[in-house]
Amino acid sequence: MAPGVWAGGLVGKRDRSRRRYTAPPNPQAKRGIYGWEVAESRWPFCRMAYGPMRKIRLMLLAVLAAECPGVSAILDGVWRSQGWGFVYSVRETDWQAFEVTSTTCVPVSKAKRLTGDVPGVEATFRSRDGTGFSIVADGGSDHKRITTPTGLTSIAIERIPALPRACTPPTANTPLNNFDVFTQTFAEQYISFDLRHVN
Image 1 (cartoon, rainbow, N blue to C red):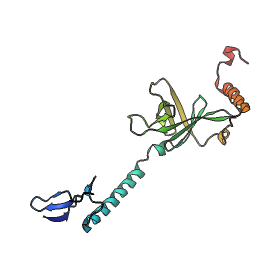
Image 2 (tube, one colour):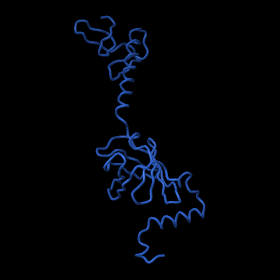
Image 3 (cartoon, helix red, strand yellow):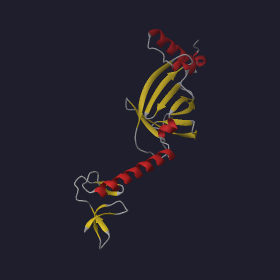
Image 4 (tube, rainbow, N blue to C red):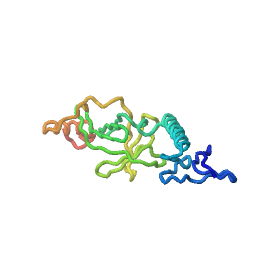
């Protein structure tokens, strides 16, 4: 038996009687998706075989990445809740929530996207306090819905061009600003002033 290279990607010794190949005697050889590949070898043809395989893999990965946008491309941007007074900024795996009124903007929580696919779910995030939530489709690429594992909370969100002007920069954490946030949030979000006879 003499050293040889098979077109299928298996590099090692060739059995001419059966036209099959065995692993190369190099302890640094590693198993790849195309069969045995040798990273370092005294055999020149092994290095020649490894180089083209690696280039082919990189080209295939580049094509797949261009054709199949990930969650980053789908969710990246700024989203506003319908009601609730929230705005969300999504950048790759990072999620930042803001409580927003017409004049104030307060960063309130951050979350990281989790890896793994869940049927019917576009992305799953977990905040620093361990709270998890998911993003699901809701009628179009610019309309999504936030859901929780219990299913008790569901918030419709829509894409907007950019963060509100009040968020650039966010409201500073001062006693006077905190009072403004409190009063403005109640003025815009609380619906029972008339029912409770509050003026």
